[in-house]
Amino acid sequence: MREKIQNNSGKILFVVVALFIIFLGYNLYLAPVEGIENKFVYLLKTYGYIILFAWSILEGEAGLIMAGLLSHVSHMNLYMAIFVAGLGGFTGDQIYFYIGRFNKAYVHKNFKEQRRKFALAHLLLMRYGWPIIFVQRYMYGMRTIIPISIGLTRYSAKTFAFINLISAWVWAAVTILPAWYFGEEILEVLHWAKEHWYFAAPFGLIIAGSIIFYFYKATKKKEKSLES
Image (cartoon, one colour):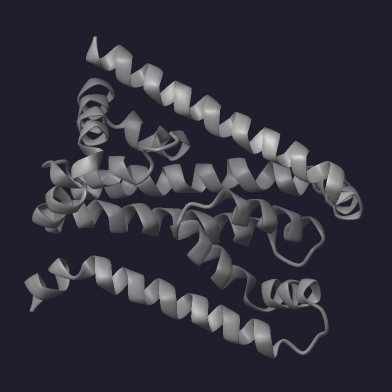
């Protein structure tokens, strides 16, 4: 029975995520306010910590920034938001770790195109040891690969869990605190962007593209340095 659950863990995770999305959509539809924007605000106020936890499992910084803004306007508690977001990030990487630990055949079969990244992750772990667990959340393109690849090794599950938990809370604090501290300025920018979307949209695309390009080049540079 246990082996059957382990082999279908990916499908189980997909079902859980799908059910959560359906739950949010249903409650968004039933929100007792008018307008899609007001419905989203109502949903965040009502299920803010649940949404933050689920969003953090996927390690989405956008959700943490939103939590920082909600904390700024006193719709969420700052310390609770950091605590919940950290637990979510911790849970996400634990899931990836145990996918690697208990589903090795599944990983080797379904991640063939990611072989270079898995090799890179193993090299990083061998060269830098436990700090790579701490910083992998900030490595674009490797955030899922590294926990899975560590799970494939004999690395201590307890050590990984401890470092992962501390790392997740630091990640949550580093992301949420600036959004909370500069909340007024961020809200003013968002209000301006809403009123002048035709100027903001191209600017946002340029920034997003620049960030993606930067991390892509940084990852490629790291791969080349480890191969040489």
